[in-house]
Image 1 (cartoon, rainbow, N blue to C red):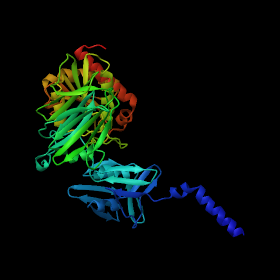
Image 2 (cartoon, helix red, strand yellow; image 1 turned 90 degrees about the vertical axis):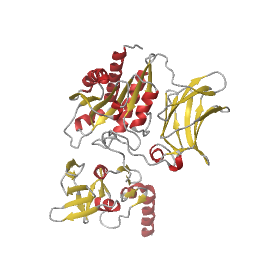
Image 3 (spheres, rainbow, N blue to C red; image 1 turned 135 degrees about the vertical axis):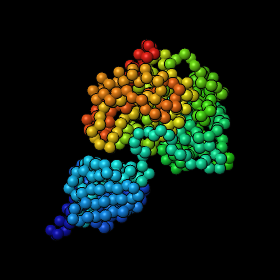
Length: 470
């Protein structure tokens, strides 16, 4: 009888406290959607606040060669010209000869070298994730593009079957912006019950970059929830027809509106909406100039282009967007300023597309917002970059306002041949608002207070140049 009672108590214990059993669950590793077999050696392990993963299992599944030196307790991972060297117990490793500090030193268990998850991401160019609820390590071998935006755009693959590829969709300030890599002849129409604006793009398809970076589904379809417009509640997009191949973009209206559209030589489609009291209509139009100062705010990177990755694993693209949206919100308080933002979410845009947006909108100034990074944690501070002499006044003025509020080192105003500041025809600058690779800079850059101050300083500089008032 006592044995039976003990068994019942034990079963009740398991039912009442399942979490305790789950706490000892070995973390699983999922690489590009496939779970890695961890039956040999030590598996992944959560030690304190650091997730440790077996470097050999991950490396070999990615085609790396792994060499273990027992005498020095070191492991070398190599693929092509990429070499990673680390030693058990040491809190620093080398990646292609550059020293990288580790969250925790590598450790040896059951003949397996375990290393911090974040180092796997930075050292091997993977995008990493950790789900504490399911104890799952997620690794993606198609990484974000890390580093400073280069002087030219990546080489694009040929358009299949002569179709134009859609590369980006954004909606901001009652304006739909559709970026493509070829000629487009849009068909814009409107229907009621409920009110919608329909934008069809014949002979078009979604680019692979768009599907991977912006679309919600593998077929390219998705939606954008709009929160800053009284006219549009949602933007939806999908393949409307495969024969002929046609992309359809639908704007769900909150009230009736007129749609005026234009296509620039740069293959960027703009659809501007204006509230009306009657039926929604559409007509072609060129961008209008109502006398306002047009300011283009460009949050750098986005989508798969993460930009710099901070010491704590934060992405520069998110920092850039946070500051950019704050600048836009403040500038919208000025009646004589019209603000255009190149992206209002995690959209991936090429450098050419950013320039195209500024040119098609006939911007008066262009301000690109970035964070900086270096291979060592030593460099720090704020700097402002420009390419053409017409941009120097803008650069000097913005730097004058931004530097004091940051409290960071003054790295000065410098010239640099950057695509977005070189190819634009209006005054254009690129602001580097600190180093995400420096512990002190990162600590303040990721705070909302710092981002608020930077945004206000940028606005103050723009207001001084144009002498506008609220």
